[in-house]
Image (cartoon, rainbow, N blue to C red; front, side, top):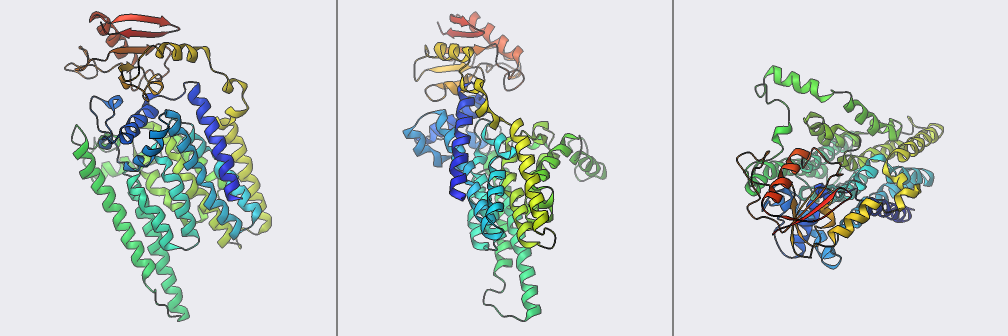
Length: 481
């Protein structure tokens, strides 16, 4: 059953993500960025990403060296679609361990419900249909790790969790939480043995292992954020500190702590996020201590000043889904007093109903929409105009057009220029591109390229002699003189 569901959801994820890409629903931020990095790895180079800025090393933005594992596949299949297929495979793989655990521990019906609930969950749907992100590696790693925790296989849980340090800098805190869980369970086991006076040769092993893992997780995150990222960042720091609250109040002051506490649960969008996380398990997953492993990720997201982090459609919700469903399996398995068979059936029915409702809202429903299988006329126009750009050339592109070029050209953003104020460039880039292409219908009008900055740069390119090769359906193509 586990492998069957994994295969089914791999096909579903692949179809949905590839169809969305064919309709130009992905962007340079972030599919193009990651393709530039993996393309560099595939050719034995450092991950320099021009879409982030001239000569920008992506390991100075986030710490994700695990992406290099995709390089051999990309070398054989050099396309942005390769990244989407790999992401689909990794996300789908998360269904296998949790389905198998639920089947063995509770029964086949529960295994089927958990596997389908996880695979069709709103968190994975949002993650797999939103460009490409490094956290696709964390999803199966966490699924295998929390399954091992639920089965009390401490060494296996640790082995699956350790690579999280190579996925993203904040995931060391989740590794630390896993270590804390192992240490806590080790203490409980030791107390039970002492009460039963049952000797064992591995008496203190889980506790010591958990402490070591927790320390490694905290230390790993500290080293990555305070040492490695600043060392590789052109600005010499960690770019995301400013998104944490408290800048207006003295650090550690009573006012600062009160502000952070209020900010943690306000605005109400955060309540919706917490509701959406608890509802797939009919709120019974909250009874499992495994669910506490969500806390490190939720804490920095709810404290951050970036409103995108609070929303249910944020791709980072994908890493929470295996933890949420592991909590449900843990409760169904270890708390028969709380969930006898009649109540278990009601919980699984509620979970299935909630998943069905959210699946109708999130992009998995694309598979039954005829429009999702058709290429819009605007996309066909874009493909035809971009075909005029030779392979290996340099291009300044708008956001949505960028991933259509990153596999065969050196691509930067059309709004990049130079001048005393980066937000209002007054000159061409230091190394001007040979081609400029801009889509007036690009919906990303605020970030990364505000409309006024894009218009300013197009005027500058024209003033410096760039020739208009084509303009059709809102897409403008310029070539250097």
